[in-house]
Amino acid sequence: MKKQNLVAGAIILTAASTLTRVLGFVFRVYLSGKIGAEGMGIYQLTFSLYLMFMTLASGGISIAITKLISEHIVSHGEDGVGVIVKKALLWSVFSSVVIGWLMFAGSEFLSVNVLKDARTALSLKFLAPTLPVIAVSSCLNGYFYSMRNVIKPALTQIVEQISKIVIVVAIFILWTPQSIEYACAATVLGLGLGEVICCIFIGAGYRMKKRKNLINPANAPVNVLKRMLGVSVPIVASSTLSSGFRMAENVLIIEKLKQYGDSQSEAVGTYGMLKGMVLPLLLFPSSLLHAFVTTLVPEVARANAGGNDTRITSLISKVLQITAMVSILIVCVFLVFSYELGTLIYKSNTVGTMLAMLSILCPFMYLEMVVVGILSALGQQVHSLKYNIMDSVIRITLIFFLIPIWGIKAFLWVMIVSNLFTSILNIKRLLKVTLVSFNIGDWLIKPTLAAMAAGTAVKLICRYTVGEMFPLWITVIIGVAVMSLLYLLALFLMACIRKKDIIMLADHFRQAKARVS
Image 1 (cartoon, one colour):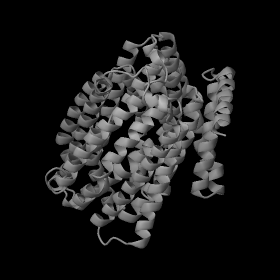
Image 2: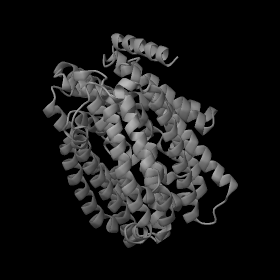
Image 3: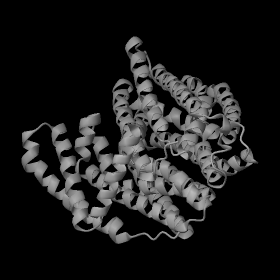
């Protein structure tokens, strides 16, 4: 088996994740044009409940398999890996079929009594059969990550996204839904068929990769299911509670917006604009960081199993540094071009206003994403569960009392407080259980100064030169490119990035390219 190191694997996954995020974001823009803000609200409301069922069916299984296989390879080599995958698949299929049936059978009740909108029932019925499919895909993706073979999951991401887009667009071309309810149902039907194609693709990849000695080995691991549940149950509990709270939060937002004075249509439309348009735009750049989290988990698990504290510290420090520097650049881009992006993508100044206000969340959201992944690899899932519960209680309480008074602006402030709260707690826990020290100067202060200088320069350039010469979309592209170059140059001059780092990254990129070819 060709083994890929952390950076090489991250480069491959970053390329795939970036492509799928671009495709997914373009698809969201297309979808918002087809079903409007209210349709996006119903779509997001449906998915908030679906996400809870999906978490129950498959949440944590990928990380659990990755962790178990990585630790098993350290002590016994590859013999026995197939036993872990086989038992994980059997458990996942069984549990996801049961949960999928419950979701299908209770769709009418859930739509009326939980989501408070009967128009979501048909979409829930279409989504229920996808749960076993997603569970199988999660198991197999966990296997490939643990074996340091990221090419198959990377290709799977691309195949899945393309399949979903093609199917949904074809459905809208061949059949024009006459209501928002049927438009949302048609959308989720296409997404479900895309999940099936994704599962078939990753399953075929596993069949080709599998060797007989991995299925009936001499060193078969014991208590696989117990150990797997020991890892996945805290993650599932945390994610399910988080999903349940988020679903309750989403329903509550709409109800409280109605108390503020909005009609049902206006409340769902405002909610759809925030959750279906603004937040996806904020999270779009996270594809650059998701790859590092995915490839970091098996590396940290192996180092942790071998008691290699030096390796753990080195891995975590490098990823946190990259996360902080990338996040600060993204904040600068969103602050400088918030209204331009809102106008270009959604033809809405309101989106631009929300984007500008929430852009400061990016470093905290992205750091939390990375830190939670690391804590899971270190067996610290229970603490993330505790932080999520505390955060959700605070959010729902603030939503209940503040939105009826100040409307959607109150929720924007709730999001800021919430993300600061959870990110600080998770980072504090990471620093406590590892030898990592947070370099505030090189990771935050210097990058912030570099971003401010680059953003100011680009704002002046776009206002007085480029902005008068080119259309808005070209101006934004040129501005982001120039800002990125100026930012990197400033980091280099302030010694946040060194020549040896660039040489190392270039070497790893060549290794990754050679492996792909």
